[in-house]
Image 1 (cartoon, rainbow, N blue to C red):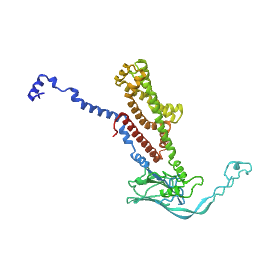
Image 2: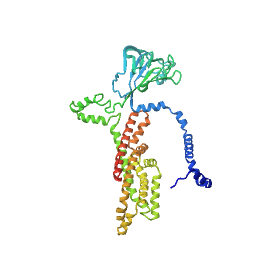
Image 3: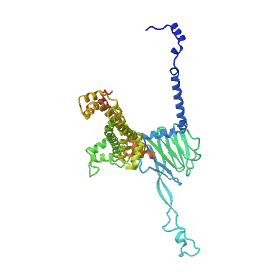
Image 4: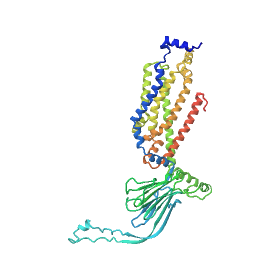
Length: 496
């Protein structure tokens, strides 16, 4: 093919301008697509109010939630009475266990004489039946109950120091709170109620939303504290998952791994009714803080829910797909009936089916399996029928020409072509439903999804939520690997 010179091309262009002029779409398609994309993104930004959402987002709270996924807190409260007596109390279910003496808190105690009002004698009231009865002389006032305070000596806290890091600490005395961080000092005199006022300007790591209201001091990942007029609430944070193996009620709590192994193998029995090994396994499975056995049972329910729902859907969709395929079943009415049946089932989302079956059967895995079964029957039936309609017809024609019966034609002429595709698609749906079963479980269909949703509604136990999320991710990863390996083996591809 000879190349045109510049003069020849110019001559042809002058004689036939329409032949060499570029088409409109060829010139403007890229700018038009770019402009359409920008307009669409602007429309989405306006419709969903993305700018307002970003402006109103509290990134500090979001970051705090993420930190709580991988940390735990000790929450002691330092209270100050009106007479100056201080006390340090831990929550009832604090993970530090009974009689806590953490190494990051120093408590100085002293003896103090306290005057405590005596309780009124039983039945001694200033009114009521006795005051208005006929046994009292008219106009005679009842005698006031004796409530004179009694003095007694008690051991109280005179100073408490909480260390958050090497350069951050909080010291509480009956008169004031001193907070030190990064060389800065904040002093807060203690009054009564919520009347709080610092002696100087607040540093950047302290916050007071309203005048004379409580003061929040932050120590980064180490935690934070809330200073009120009569108490200081500490939130001391540490990385990790506390009491993940043994709870505070376990006989193995607080022991090292070596001590636990020694008790299991050669130590004296901690429970006369069973061995130390059985006791340790029981304490792990029935750990009240983490509920390992219940979580794993719910995870198994989710896996079974996805497997049974997908299996039943494939079993029902398999024969119906032969009816829906035009080249297999030439009857128009049968084709359309099967296709519309598939459309009806897959047009309703799995989540909607889950809500419907939860109302019908009640909460539990049966509702989840039914939702997966209904949705996947329609989806798999459509995919199976389309695969059948795209097969090579020559093997069928060859078997028909030698007089093979219709069943044999389908068995040896059709099934070998589509069976790997059918199995591959079913495996993919099984893998996908392992994820979907978690979502429909949260809607009341049981499994780990429901337990995850129940934990998230409290907004407090984030480590347990992260624990379940990790289990779900690990399960999906395992089943994704198994599904990919089986599909590669069936289709003849080498898995990378």
